[in-house]
Image (tube, rainbow, N blue to C red; front, top):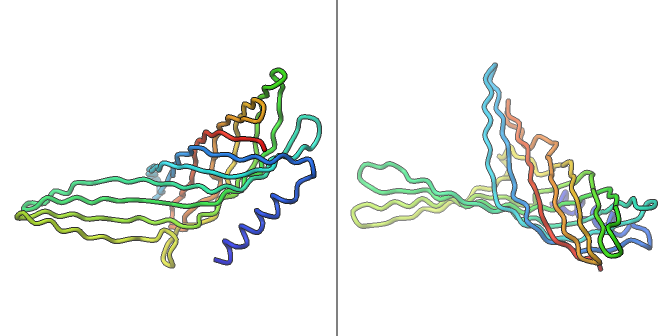
Length: 220
């Protein structure tokens, strides 16, 4: 928990450290998450992927550096969710296993951006920089349903992704790039986050996160 407080404190300090002419913005968007896991055993390599639906909302300060060059520092919350159901082959019964996954993260994007005017009200900008992410929570709720002789039973269990015995890491740093189309105070943006850190301590395994994102923002 102390790491979470420290992370939030640093993010808040970055947000208020801008110049007096910093422009405040709010944004919401869609960011489906993908994890790529690579396991290496000798000369054999096995790669698997998994994905979840994601949404985010946050604020940012865009501070002018020089001319049309700016740096935007933000703080946003991101929520990932997903589920799957597997039918089991049981001789005398019908059975299925449902997995409901959820993850909550805090992101601090620090993005350098450069704009090009498209007339009196429109502007096109490109941005790039690091995004620091910290997973506040992650869990999988598993529901096993068995139907036999007309009776149905359900068993539920919850696993914590970041528990004491977990090999998953909560901190990640991504390389972020994208574009913004602004019209007056309204902004439409999209881009890509590429995770740079290995998110697992498991032997011979590399786990990295990535996601595309699309959103809309408003400059206050």
